[in-house]
Image 1 (cartoon, helix red, strand yellow):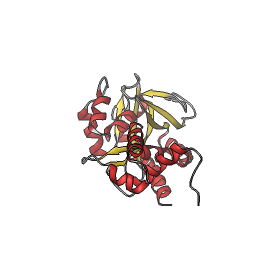
Image 2 (cartoon, rainbow, N blue to C red):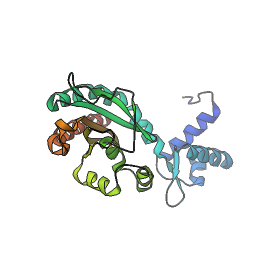
Image 3 (cartoon, helix red, strand yellow):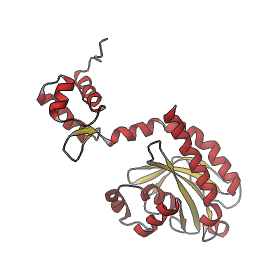
Image 4 (cartoon, rainbow, N blue to C red):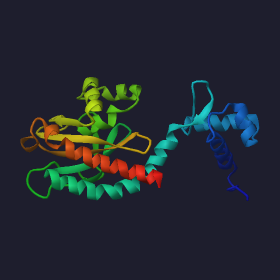
Length: 240
């Protein structure tokens, strides 16, 4: 069967990625596996590395890069969002507060799903809203399990500390009181991909008067259960 798409450079790049599916490869390994000329194989591997589709291991060998995992996660987002609506609605009904699902995008986080408290004083974050990564329990969750270097960068200017993130990792959830906005408290827990990477944060938010200054004591169990449900959705999607 002819695997040519008619776009030569893409076909050759696909050959390199397919070769790396088997594991780490030296340049000589890539040449042998793809049949490409050595300069061509090197040029493509380095170009793919620039876009994080290829990376290097500790021995300098080429390996599949982290961007592929991020794209795979994004491909599963429709399933996550489809499941999020009913889960957030149940969490809202159980807690009596507004609920959200956040994903990180660069140095911001985006509300990708929400279920608002129907009446009374409430914290309203519309779907599509961009929110800071420097404050709030969801920001803490999305940063707490990052690689050390990225976490350190994320803490610059943040209203929470490395010690607070260590506590988030230990107990599995985060809380904030007046951190993102005066008078607002929230509780968040991580949603993980099948590989265990944190890909989203489930949150409950509302006025401090109702959530108290220890909102985790009130709502952490329900938020954790909702996050676990969505994590299982992603795991089952991967298994399926």
